Image (cartoon, rainbow over all chains, first blue to last red; front, side, top):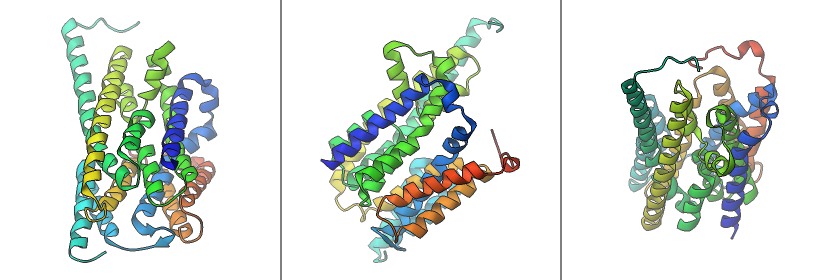
Length: 103
Length: 240
């Protein structure tokens, strides 16, 4: 049930935000302070999600096979690999290490 | 209005180029719908809920954030808040697209739903308004169809795989977030804000309830953006 609440609420808010761009008077959204924050918000959120997804289990900081996966993902990005390749090599690295008994 | 009347062949050629660009962007984006589908199921949503997310929410970053936080044990409120904050940029895209798309009636809802990173990027990179509209529709509809189809396939695959850790699906989620972040790190300010976000999150994970470190990182990131000195604004910027 909580899954559906999350899915539907987030979808509704997402659509409202998309629609707002076409309906809210531009002056409101083009305010310099609003622009400043909205431009960089994704960088803060995504960096936070990287840390959360890689180095935490519940409320504990942990170092396991995910960290190695992340390292390989960054190397793939440096080599300009496409998204799907980055994701696959990271998964393969973590899966491989676990198959060997680590992390 | 003041445009030179182009010869008909040149017009058809540039339309073909826009369609080709849109289709390629759609194919590339759709491919990682597979990873979203698999991760969402691994994070605890059902196949139906996963498909509903792609159909209704339809914004990659927000979808990954929602299932990432729910899967990590965060509350519904924290997951919805993080997904919504990531979706704020779509409002700004709409603002940029109003003069091009001039939406009215039912089209406004359709255009709004298709307003995402990819459709906006392809649209605004075209020179003339008709090509921009073409780019928007081809990319938006292409990504919508492909993303939803691949989400479904990914969700079925994730369901069949069983233990997500055995296949490194948790590491795949880390990689997805870092790959979404990567293209944004081309100027000094987003890099600084990403570092601050990461540090705040690391410091708060053991201290506050699950899901909240992400919101704290967003809050601190916003403060840094507001206090960022103007003279640093464009330093180190690689492109516009």
